[in-house]
Image (cartoon, rainbow, N blue to C red; front, side):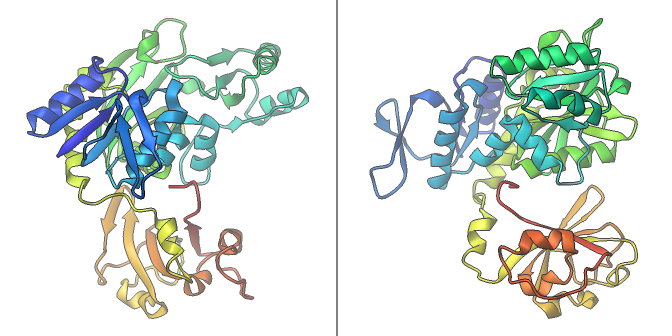
Length: 408
């Protein structure tokens, strides 16, 4: 495999470890300065220039794009995608994760716990927003902060109001978020590669500091996650459209709460804490995937008129529970089950004799008209752009989530 690592910092720990891991496995690898690309749009075929010359062919690229060059970096990644070069993190996925507001909007639509969060722009709405997240103390976050920069704990309402007013006067957009007191200055970083967590560590803030970032003096220790934390980490990364990600979670009384999904996670802290070869896991995953480039399902659906993808949730009492997939009647309605998710386990291409259980999630492809009656009224509205509404009674024992733009 010929791998390109898109990075402006060839000598930092993460880039060096990824390069070494690739070389140790016999791959050809080169660190490419993201800003030295030129996007060639003049030819019939998409192409890239690098340092003034036509870029040679690569099997895969791994983006390590800093926040300061997000716009240009995403354009470069998109061009690689147009050239059918595999990337574990797509441009859309990186863009989703880089925008804190957008990422929370996406996660809030799915079965992912997040701290109560609100976003307002008018000064007159600030006090009501603070009340909606549970009142002071609250955490105030800049939308584009990194490594704990731009994250402020406001101990009372007056201070919160003053901080928000100051930041907004400087044309900064901020999120107002509930302070999770029981986390006690701790969080968990899970490193997701593909469909599994390859390593996890707990970070602890020092002294009176509530931010646990290693760059702010936080300490780290290896941790074994329980299945619910693993499920949330993997699902959060995949919902964002990332196959390599660092997922930061708070340990709340009610379970894991996702704070952030990082598309370019640092490796030094977590490799040091766990002693694991995480860089090697990333390289191995990319090598396994180069022959299976990422497909945009939404683009494919435009070719298959009247067909679509939906995720069906088997609620307690649903008619299909206790039946096999073959006896469920789905196939008779021209609906094919692509994957079955049970707890933290994803079963691809499940056998027809598999018996459906409560809370199973079925990712299905088939006729939208056939799947329509399985979708309750609230979710059905999301499909109305694709199918003509027909009179039907809502079904309350099955839920479905259609795949829509921006939820890759």
